[in-house]
Image (tube, rainbow, N blue to C red; front, side, top):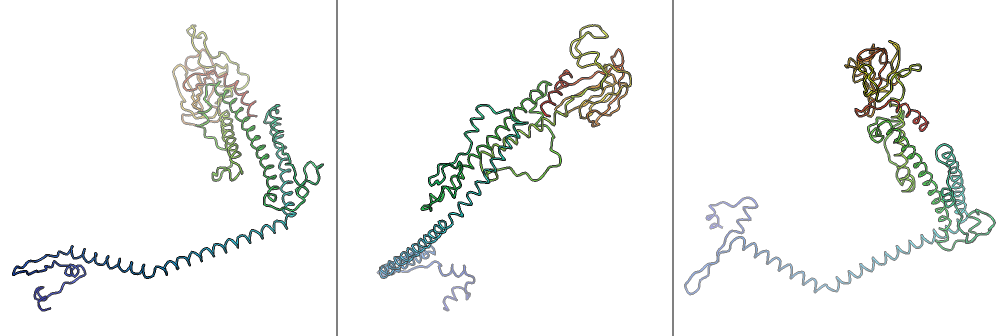
Length: 432
């Protein structure tokens, strides 16, 4: 100890790592043979590896000894554990069989009550079919066209038919009750499920009826939407574009959006049909709304005849063929001029040969112009409603006398206003 202290200068290492480094410090083993001295240096890494190898060998010897000495006891313990688990599994199987037997006995005892419930559901189903027929008649009165031969054939194929009764006791009854059809006791799960399968068949046919009705209504709405689209095209307007850019929203409705799913409707087919119908109705309602925002009325009231139509004519001043981009209405100076559709005034003032002019921008990029006015009653940026007074008839600009020059333009191209007036009657016919 004194030598150690003397070698360390009288101080012991402090701290775990310092002590660990001290314990595995470099050592030397001296060997003397025939007067010669040799030494072997043991570095710290070699010492640590030696200790780990010694510990691993010791562990392996202990493990092998225990495995050999207690092999039979370990094997017996494993077999005993497996046997105990098998017994528990068999007990569980036995309990489950007992529960199933109880349920089967209860089902056989409650057969009449069970069949009575089936009959109640069947009565409700028949009432649902009656309501479906009434709904179909309602749609056909004002919506759907008269049924064709193929439609009637399809309808007859969807009519519920009772499945043949294996236990039928009253063959003369067209639709026997379940308590009459199944008079013997059920002896298997398949027999007990048979009345439910009958109900599923009825419901399946009812689902097919509903899907066919939704398909018919969707087809009708799509056809009407197509007719509206043709009317829009007749005035140079793209129905799809105006529907996408529309700001139409139903009045006084709201709530979070929750899409209808197969879980709500009980069928993926019905969910898809409802989704298709919803999209068609949205487009239909949007196009109907946008039709009310087209310049479909005349800019002057009854009694004001036209003095010049749209198209080629002899220029009244130069007396040469020229293109007339609007329609002229006769009127006394000061006669009221009304806007033909809701929109926003984008120009109100002097415009060269147009004289005093008002230009209104409507939905879908449609523009209406009112020229040669004596007085302008609106200002640029003002929003106007259909029928609002925007000015008075005059003879300003390039004009030979008091009149109103009226134009309609779509995408910058002049469109004959008569097209809009003709479209008004068709719109009213389709959307009434």
